[in-house]
Image 1: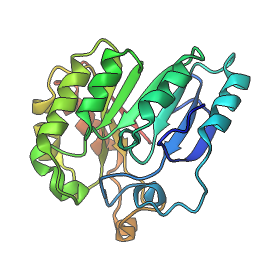
Image 2: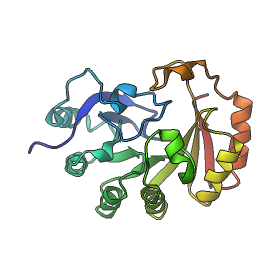
Image 3: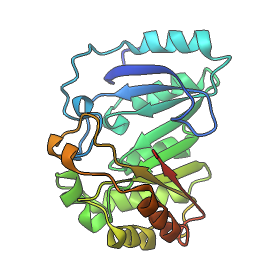
Image 4: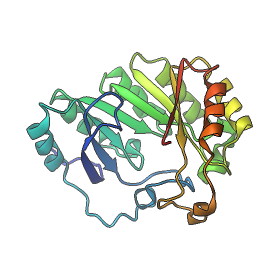
Length: 237
């Protein structure tokens, strides 16, 4: 295979969680253009992962061996759409008859549009960090809001399965934040509220002292969101 401009640092060979309803393998891309304080993959986000890059050919060879009992592959990170060779890598996966799920922060709508038009992805999960006006505060970098908005429109106007998802971290998320997100994305297919975990590595380790919302509060959030999205769920409790 021609050398690809991608940087993969990890592979979970089998998961029943990352791709809803499917048996999948998850591939972790290095680097992210956000600095979310609560990110649970800080080594990847900060480009500090000590593992050597994994040769894409090795991954594809392994997929060849297991494609008969895998449904698909989940591409996550880090931020996969930062990698110029992503499209060609996905083509190689699709040639093996596997479904592809992309996890993204939505900062590269042009690539998302290309992947959708070429029918190279089957499911897309976009992280919604906040209402677009509040992104800079949450992700700790300057964000092109128009790119975020364009990505959400491309995704919800596509014909593939998709979800928007938000990690509910008390310092960065409350009922008012939820309502702003709901009104922005009203009518979309699926929304997931993800429980914040303070028992893992994060970019901002002071968040370990922050207690997650209790399950009752998450249910209240779900009840609110269910009025705006076709389906809504809570994950991580």
